[in-house]
Amino acid sequence: MERAALVRCLNWAGQYTSHVHSDFGNHVLLEISGSLRLFGGLSALRTKIAEGFASLGYEACIAVAPTPRAALWLSRAGQAVTVSAIKNLSAHLGALPLAATAWPDKVCRNLRDLGLRQLGDCLRLPRNGFGRRIGKAYLQELDQALGREHDPRTAWQPPEYYCGRMELPMPVSKHDWLLHAIGRLLRELSGFLRAREAGIRRLQLYLQHEDAAATRCVLHLLHEERDAQRLLELLSERLHREVLPAPVVAVRIRSDALRVLRRAPEQLFGQRERKAGVSMTADMLVERLRARLGGEAVHGLCLVPEHRPESAWQVSEPGRDSDALRVKERPFWLLDSPRRLPIRAHQPWLDGPLSVESGPERIETGWWDGKDVARDYFRMRTHGGICLWVFRERRGTRAWFLHGVFA
Image: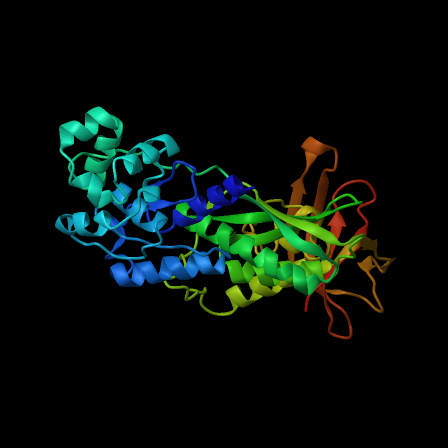
């Protein structure tokens, strides 16, 4: 479980630098020299990282040093200091206990038998004698900590998707209490997505129970999203319509495939950039309604490239762009199926004779799918002034049909 938490921390920390390292102890190493200007300097970056770890529920001792091993040893000894210059490393490292190195107990015992208690004692020994008695590998680590030798490390490679799990300290039945644990995982997810410059369109939440199958909630989004607070709001809406079969003992979140952000990313320090005007508000409303009512209850309509009026639209994702053909004006209200009109005095009749205003517009298509049509459409007006869309069949009985009403 500790390794899984460390992996999630490594994924989260990638938002601050692309050089994240760990040997899977209890530490995360970040190479931040290339990120200082981006985050407003060392002090601002250090504060942001510390606040981020705290928001995830971890207590971190952050040490800054010119070499990774020195930063690791200082942090392991609880020294939350900043050492800017290599020449100052000896003074700071010399006061550290031997335990800060995490060397094997046998090595530390041999050093103590020689009367050595701190790293400064080791640094004062002759190099050849230290290497011969204790081991050249440990001499090399001292040199790496002091910047005398290179200390190459393999960068952490994040996975292709996020998966985080958190066990709760006690079984929980109330939705509001679950949101705290969910929020922590979402903040981890947000950092992971920022590191990948990506967003998600689908998120799966699993609420695990002791004596029942896990409750699964799926969140569908209209746009790529990575903001933890926004995702938490939507999951809160989704949870409040879920009836839990048993208390929840663990929470798990899994993202689907990552997507490159297609909209302007959020600003560096959390201010959310929004699309201008109504479109963003409409999208947010649709996502909230889907979370509250279910994805099947909220959908959109779009036009498709089809000449047959009854087939020129389809149910779609809200906000999907239409790919309609350029055609003449169409009525706002289209009947589910055309209504046959009576003929009187050789004219179509609806509460009186219909007068032609424009037309015909010929539509003859569909031979390839067995639903072919051959029609001449007219814009007609009733005696009461209602504007109708009427067609006459070009085959068979050449009957007249009402197909739509103009607004």
